Length: 440
Ligand SMILES: NC(=O)C1=CN([C@@H]2O[C@H](COP(=O)(O)OP(=O)(O)OC[C@H]3O[C@@H](n4cnc5c(N)ncnc54)[C@H](O)[C@@H]3O)[C@@H](O)[C@H]2O)C=CC1
Ligand SMILES: O=C(O)[C@H]1O[C@H](OP(=O)(O)OP(=O)(O)OC[C@H]2O[C@@H](n3ccc(=O)[nH]c3=O)[C@H](O)[C@@H]2O)[C@H](O)[C@@H](O)[C@@H]1O
Image (tube, rainbow, N blue to C red; front, side, top):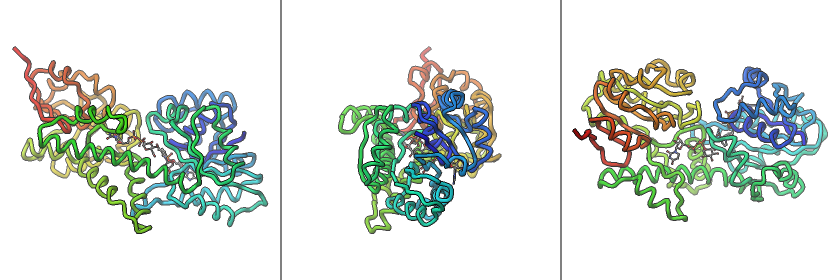
C-alpha cells in the first residue's frame, strides 16, 4: 500500500516511521520545509526515543520519503493520513484551521480513488465536516472515503506505543474502507475496535479526559493526605491493586501538562457545553490541575515566608521525561510564579533547554548540569521526573546549596537515597514533610 501522511509532528512522524517499519511505502509531507530538510538528512526534529533509528533504517530501505510537496506526495497515495495539529482556541475549543487547510491541500491534489484517515484529535462531527470540505474543493473526479482513526501514543514512548498499541480504533461506516485500514495495520497484531466515526472521535476525547481526571483525582487525594497525615504513594498503591481501578496514572505530583491533556479536556468541556450537557467533572479536573501546578511555589513560600531574593534550583523543564516538548509544561507556570515573587531561578533539563528558552525566555537562567543549578541555592525543586534525577548524587547537590531543602514535585527521590545525605528537609507531594538526619 502507498501511504501519504500529512504532518510530521509526534503523531505523523511516529505513524509514518512505524508504517514503513511494517513494510509499507510511506511519504510524509509537511508544510514546514525546515523540518523536511532535517528529516531528509536522517535526523529527527523532535527528541523521541527510538524514532531516529527507525527513520534512518526505513529511509535507507527506500520505504520512507519526506517532501514538502503535496502534489508529489498525493499523486500515488491509496491512503492519506491526516496528522496535523489541532491546538486550542482562545475559548477552549479545538482550532481546526490546520486540518481545514490539509483537507483543501488534499482536495486539490488527489488524482486517484483513496481513503482519507483522520488521525488528529478532532471534535465529534469533524470527520463529517472534513468530508464535505474535501468534496466541495475536489479538483479531480475521484472517489474518496473517510475513516476516523484516533491516536493514543504518548510522547517519550511513541514508537513502542505505536508498534504495541492496546487497541486500534477504526471509525467508519463503509466496510470496504474499514477492511483496507485493518489490512494496513494487520502486521502490528493489535486488537481492532470497529465503530462509527462519531464514536471514534468521542473515544479519543473521553480517554484523555478520563486519564486527566484520574490524575486530578489523585492530586486532590494527595492534598487531603497531607492534611490528615497519610501517604499518597501508599494510598495510590493500595487503590491500584484493585483491578477495577488499576495503578496507571495515579502518580500524584504537580499536575498534568503537555500538548494534549490540557487542550483536549478543555475541548471536550466546550463540546459538552455546546450541547447543553456541561461535564462539571471536567471543570474540577482543570481547576485542580491549575492549582496543583503552583503547589511547590506555595510550599516554598510557606517555608521561607518570602521568596524575594531566594535562589531556586529547578530540575526538569519538559512536561514529562523522555521528551523535549515544553507545551503546557508545569515548569512554565512555576518559573513565572517564582520570578513574579522575586526569586531567582536556575534550571537544568537533559534535553528541553533549547525549547524552554523559547517559551520561558531569559527570566530564568539555564545550567548545563544539576550541580551548577544547585550551586548556592536556597531550595531545589524537582519538576520533571527524569530517570537521571532518580540516580542523582543528591548529597553532592546539597553540599553546594545554601539551604539543604528539596521540594520534590514528582515524589521521585527514594527514601534510601535521602537517608544517606545527612541533614535534609524533604518536602514531596501528598506525604508528610520530613527532616532526615544522619545518625551519628
Ligand atoms: N503529541 C502527541 O503525543 C499526540 C497528539 N495527538 C493529536 O495528533 C495531532 C497532531 O499532534 P502533534 O503530532 O503533536 O502535532 P505537531 O503540532 O507536533 O505537528 C503537526 C505538524 O503538521 C504540520 N502541518 C500543518 N498543516 C499542514 C498541512 N496542511 N500539510 C502538511 N503538514 C501540515 C505542521 O507543520 C507540524 O509539523 C493533534 O490533533 C494532537 O491532538 C494524538 C495523540 C498523541
Ligand atoms: O492525546 C495525546 O496527545 C496523548 O496524551 C497523553 O500522552 P502524553 O501527553 O504524551 O503523556 P502522558 O504520559 O499521558 O502524561 C501527560 C501528563 O500527565 C502527567 N502525569 C501522568 C501520569 C500520572 O500518573 N501523573 C501525572 O501527573 C505527566 O507528568 C504529564 O505532564 C496520553 O497518555 C496518550 O494516550 C495520548 O495519546
